Image (tube, rainbow over all chains, first blue to last red; front, side, top):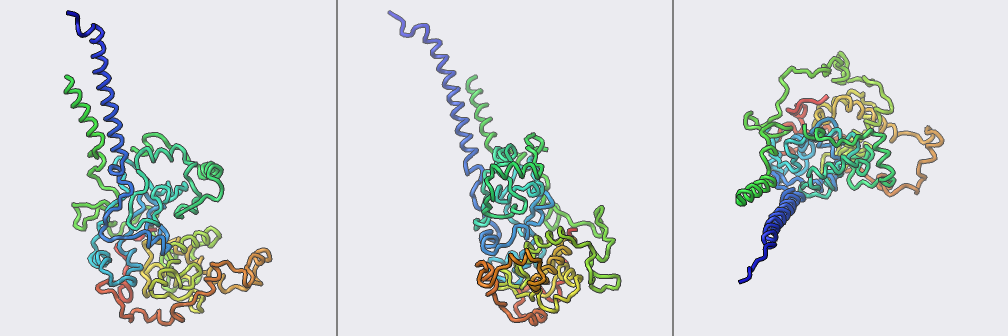
Amino acid sequence: MPQIFKSSANSFARTSIVLAVVTLGVLAGVFFELIADSRYSTRQGDAREQPVPFSHTHHVGSMGIECRYCHTGVENSQHAMVPPTKTCMNCHSQIWINSSTLEPVRESYRTNQSIKWTKVHDLPDYVYFNHSIHVKKGVGCETCHGRVDKMPLMYQGPTMQMRWCVECHREPEKFVRPREFVTKMGYEPAEPQEVLGPKLVKEYNIQKLETCWTCHR
Amino acid sequence: MRKIGLLIAVCGFLTGCARLDMQDQPKYKPQRPSEFFADGRSGRPEVEGTIARGNLDEDTALYTGKDEKGVDLEAFPIPVDKALLERGQQRYDIYCAPCHGRIGNGLGMIVRRGFKQPPSYHIDRLRTAPVGHFYEVITNGYGAMLNYAAQVPVRDRWAIIAYIRVLQLSQNANASELAADVRGKLPQPGQETAEQKAALKMQPLVPGDSDFHNFPANPATPAGVPGAFGAGANKPSNQPERK
């Protein structure tokens, strides 16, 4: 009786096992990468519920209130700062004073207890990030936070993955804008970015900081 | 053997996509809540009497806007140059223009949405008011206006005041006083841009500013909000003043 399998079948079987394992590994890798990049994981575009449904569309878009009116820390410190309740009361001591939506704000002002806002742009704790240096070097609010003036409830515009940070750290000239337009929403460069960008990089002495310890320190 | 390899691979992938402990570390970052302190804040107020290095308020005039006798300063305590004016313009447009308007007529967007109208800067009382008066108002609030001590640091307050003087000059200037090349840029009647036309048409919502002084008598006090205006208005916020 002839043999069913030739001796080469042995090596075929071994190769197929290796191939199967490699294929499965690659597929699993691709699968998990897709999950990690998905909006479910990055929470990109995911409007968070807040104790008061504060609308940037209304305050920035229609009222024209400048970013720094509330986020006073953005130029001088690491943290842009969620404003204290007193800042809300600058206007809301007189406007919408009977609105039940704003009751948590009034209560906070009366009782001196902080409103517990939900953090939207939450970098991992092992990332060092400083707002002031980015503002000084001409990185617009919009560049990282998106069109805030069109966000009824705050959500995260970009992915905020490391890859996304590094994109700009490698090629800042593609993203910088003149300092006076840092807070402008819907900014359009006056001359082509390919011309303006390198000029600003030189003028503001922007370094391409790509070392690990720039952010992980 | 193969099973163990697979197990290791699966564990590796699972930890790879879960949010790791290091992502949320038990440490305080700015404005993070705290369970330790009674007020629930990790940010602590300065101990009373603490002075940060370089922040000693030696210059009374600069920090209070008053001279030794407590009278409002007539002259600026810091030199006024173009850089200060430009800084003042930028800060004014951020912090003051929402109510006072970009040209200081008291018709900012917030006023048009129902906030009590502040007086125009171009009335005689404010054109002759000493600079120390404006400093006092920014620092401690006035009438319906809450204080801006936390939002506007001391030097920026003076920059804003210098810019208010610029606005006052601009709105009461005579075109013949301008240099010839600048005068040429003025729009001739009928040539104004749409924005300028709108500004010319804009009328005060409330004539005059007399009722502004009677403001605390206004019954529209939000229930239970202390210091919104009137008596408690001068109370500084619990936030330490930024210099």
